[in-house]
Length: 392
Ligand SMILES: Nc1ncnc2c1ncn2[C@@H]1O[C@H](COP(=O)(O)OP(=O)(O)O)[C@@H](O)[C@H]1O
Ligand SMILES: CC(=O)OP(=O)(O)O
Ligand SMILES: [Mg+2]
Image 1 (spheres, rainbow, N blue to C red):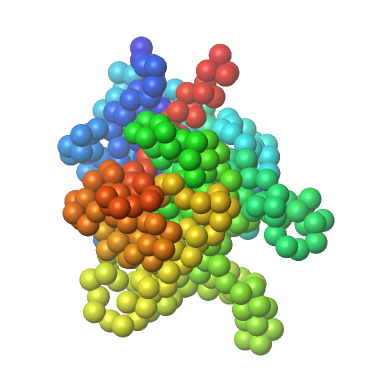
Image 2 (cartoon, rainbow, N blue to C red):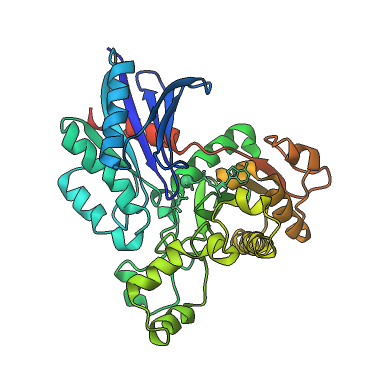
């Protein structure tokens, strides 16, 4: 009987999943799904590998436990002729201990749960399906795959904050996130442009959460997120890099509690906070309001500034890759970022950019520019295959 792996990817603004056939040399996608939360009653939507509709269910409630039960029921009913071998989870924070995927035991779960304060928007959403699956199907192997693992190659000084070094020894350092996405994109880039692997590449993952990765020879050398997924770029509702004095001011003069500051910086800031309109880039691009324009400008300025910072780490720039919801779909944003990087030799072909071709480099560009749609679910399936093979 052939074996499958169900992959769950809970992000800050979306829940996605994929079912993969694991018996072949590499995982093969059987179906993919998402929870559409745009309406009052969320809808579970499942599609085939080519995007054809397979299943839809308007959900009666917003309880995540019921959602994962629905997903497992769908898998049993539609792919019951195969053996569901494991569940792979995207876990945003792996802390200092995990440089690769691991099977979730009670001890592992407790360690991951303890990291919640370092990713309060994500860690509970990532761990909820682990708990739900343990309750419904305790016999299933569950595998945790980390956003932080790809960045374990970060070394001082890039990994350090300029505070007394005893804190670094206690784990207060730059971890970086979106590693499953960077790993996938780096692998795909190596396939389409192998000569660039040894080059100086910056990948811009621009989604609801957003970060940059500076890499060479498929190794992360620098990244914009830090101890938490709050640092770096302007995001949907997160502030990104900010004068740390602002936090002290809010606590000391505005008398805000740590919880209130956390909520402000994670959930009320970023594109939403600056525009006062929306966290969604599509809404801002369609709006004629000056505050929406200002939020977009702050977003693109910060991306360009931090691409330059990553290029400084790399001592130059050979390749820039866009991925994530905004990076893949917002041609205006790609074009504005690249215009701000013209001094670094970045030029794009406007027609290729409008049509979202894979290669969008302009003829006179000193830098290769690509759009590579990310696939965190496939990376997780590959990690599951590696863990299962190790266990054999
Ligand atoms: N066609 C589009 N044009 C502009 N922005 C888009 C488009 N499609 C998606 N986006 C933006 O992508 C972001 C969500 O990115 P995504 O990577 O899907 O999210 P998540 O980080 O939750 O995985 C939102 O800001 C959304 O507005
Ligand atoms: C780490 C992170 O920001 O993830 P997401 O983009 O899913 O919010
Ligand atoms: Mg995401």
